[in-house]
Image (tube, rainbow, N blue to C red; front, side, top):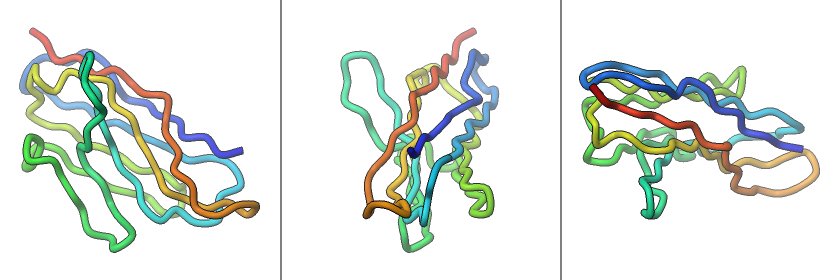
Length: 120
């Protein structure tokens, strides 16, 4: 059974930094793409950053230059380094991955979500 486990959320002051981590566990054959999304109250989940199968990086315009997505393929872990945080970054952050297991084809998986609150 595949699980995505997130960590690293919390409370931070404007201008501060946080690093989110997501580790995929289970009978994973290959991770094709990974990313981070966030959801504001009563809003749809939106893409923050992603590494698609091409290996490029994609960022939402609102976080370009402040957030960085990175991966550690050896440990099935990816990160979201968030710098110069703003109150409008306050949201629940979710990691996601498109991966295949040894038993099944490619499926999308989601983490449980972690709260990031930026406030003075």
